[in-house]
Length: 573
Ligand code: 9MR
Image (cartoon, rainbow, N blue to C red; front, top):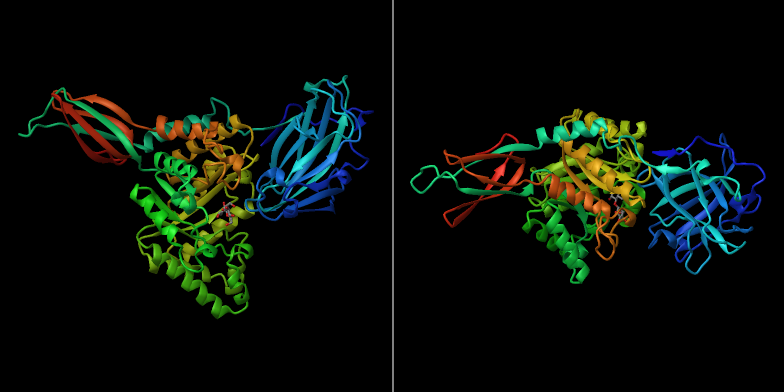
């Protein structure tokens, strides 16, 4: 959600423009990996502007600034001047429906000294972005520049309606509109949060009763009992990479340390995708998987088919117009891959993102999806089979067509007896942050089928660290409070191995960001159970704790004994 501190205002007349007459014409592509981006001018109708810059980034540059649009200023900005910059943004195409840019007003070099910087995203609707600032020092003409960083993975965005004006020293900064990114339901006393926390208490806990007896079976009063939750029943995890799980560098060790300390659930970000296993599963993937399983980290499989153009192995392109060959190669892939991991994975995303990626379905007919689920089921009957989609709660949960398509596919599969038994909801957020109350409604809607649901890919790509941490907290509270959600999977946690590095929980040097702290505070503090009890006259004591696996240590007259216990929602003795 975007808000402005005041309603849209016309900019005061007589201001000094900082770029040429049509500011869009002043921009040129720049950056170390500028070849990964293309820019062109397009016509726009029905808007307060008629032209836009359309920027396509074909693949992930090393950083957002490795491909950028730059325009040098043609007039000076003096210290104390108030400058107003306004532009409009929309996303034409991306992997999640949201497209990004970071806008900055800065010196040319060497230290850039930005006077203003904001990272924003938009979905398919035009969004106005207002960036007013007061210059802290002089920016002589031609020595400052406006920058749109576009080094974001595979997206096409459009930038239009750019107005850049120096209002001098007579306009008050506070009187100008400013884009602030926030979300509905963020306030400390938001009703949805109160209800969600109460629900968590009700549905995520059980009563654990400990009774201590001596070797003759008699109750032991006054024994000390330490009850600690060791593993949550609910899944808290992240996507991981085989390279780092098997690597020997200090970073790889650090990476593993975090995985085993903070997660009970994992998925391989790319290592099990069809292109990665086309010539067989690389040994390091098995090695990494075993490492996770030895640590009781549950692993889900992602994904058997991502049935659209660029995500298919290049080797199958020549087969696209040969249906029987195509069917056979897909069937072999599903059977071999699922069999290879049989008994080790609890879930498979059989199909990923069919709304936008449906080349194989177009070629082979709708019912082929049922065949794919059947093949996966035959290869591992105990594995839960999921359909996974984006644009359901993310992007503001505003895309009714995307949601409707997902609903339609699940219904079609269920009605036609396909062995689907899970619904995977991705959650890649930019600056379009969905109200948590709305997320809960969407979770309700997709629970109608009676299948368990997972939050399969969570990333929150914001440069406002406080906002990012709060949204993480609220998203997690919402998901953990929903009775039909069984796990939350982060889409990465380390800046150097994250598809949107801004979204990571840890910086490159492993210092933790507020968003990482938010995760730990919830999973390992607020939702942790660690209690010291003393048995009563009947040798018993009870505690209400979060569901999961416990270590119970009894100490009495200098001797200790530890037993393991599982606490389900119904409680245990
Ligand atoms: O994060 C993944 C990135 O490293 C890959 O290059 C890309 C293509 O395989 O896939 C990314 O993960 C996507 C996931 O598989 C499906 N949902 C969207 C994820 C982010 O793009």
